[in-house]
Amino acid sequence: MEKTHIDYAHELDLALRPDSTVPIIGKEYGYFSGPGVPLFSVGGGYMRQALQQILVGFHARRGYYIVETPTIASAELFKLSGHLDFYRENMYIFQIEDREFAIKPMNCPYHLLIFVSHLARYRGKVRFPFKIFEMGRVHRYEPSGSLHGLLRVRGFTQDDAHIVVKEGDLEKTVMEVFDEMRSIMSDLFLIPLEKGTIRIRASLSSKEKIGEHYMGTVEEWEAAEGVIERISSKIAEKHGIGSTRGIGEAAFYGPKIDVLMSLKGSGGVKEWQMGTIQFDFNLPRRFGIYEMVREIFGDVRIFVIHRALIGSIERFLGGYLEHYKGRLPFVLAPLQVALISIKTGGEIDAAIDDLTVKIQRGLISMGIRAGLRETSKTSLTGDVRAIESTVKPPIIIYIGEREVKERTLSLSIYDHNLGKRRNLTISYGNAEDMMKAIAEIIEKEEEGARRLAGSAPRIPADLSHLL
Ligand code: ZN
Image (cartoon, rainbow, N blue to C red):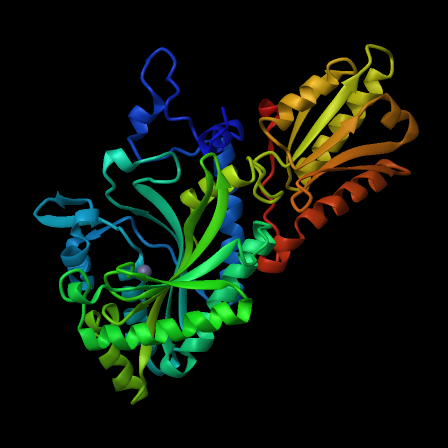
């Protein structure tokens, strides 16, 4: 049977298989974490942390402020934002003492609260576009029947940002956001974005539901939808990709531009909604932002944009794992380098051990997640096949008799563009040269992340248990 993203996530140790049983206790893991609440495992911890470091660096370098907001808030906040009236059936609401609270289904109310406090405190010093970013974990109600692995969940993390922009800079800012999304997809995830892989959709309201499903007046919606349609055809033209319209696909607070990506999964090629750029004329009004801006800056019209480049980390990861059959880019892979020492049973084994340990220590001190596996010439092929069909380390280094005697290293590096491994042999003089050569190969794998974030995440670990 073809593997699903749940199989890949399990093999890479990214997330617990919800249908596996807790030993002795006898109940499934998913029973304890709850349906729709994926539990990331050790490998998933490294992957998420590395992703977060890249995204934080990326956004900070592009002028976004970085924030982190609480999971629960007084229901008053969501009353003010309109979520309680227009989004209530998707929210988890509960009582603490005599006050109603809710788990945040979106990060926006908090981000706007931060913007308002910033504006009240720093007034004329506030610069536009004002951009605020968070890896924000949100929870939304989904009926049990619709839940599926990482693809349809009740708790997920968004690469979420809100931008307050002056009308004159609106188009330029939206175009920039689309460029940002392209950079993340190509430099981090190594996805070639071309016609056929992605297209965009102008997601609009259905007119008869304005006031009921959609907050605001028909005039406001028409004006905003005009802008959305104009910009989305500009993006499509500039990047040579297709565009479409989706009636009834808008958010309750405004129309949006959604990025649809075609990924091949266990059920064939499917189109996924990934990044999104959304307009909002409701939240700024509800938070009194228009008046404050006018009072401080005079006759200035501002827009609030919600945007996510990846969308939901969980859903994106699920689609990605299926499309690339569990091959994560080097910077995000839990196990980045596998060391395979090929023992002979003879005297040379001591030297093989020595060299292997030296390389492993060197890698870990460089901040790399490495693992060590001993094998013999006869079991080598089978062992490597097993590793390739489960953990899939982007780099494998072989250390055997020949390598020790000839002072060479045999490496195998997975190439995302080719969709297969490249083999490489390097010769070295002394141990120092050898580590330098390995470091150079690793730095090459990290180039994309460095271009995006200024540095590549280095979170070391000995993950030999995966091999
Ligand atoms: Zn938002």
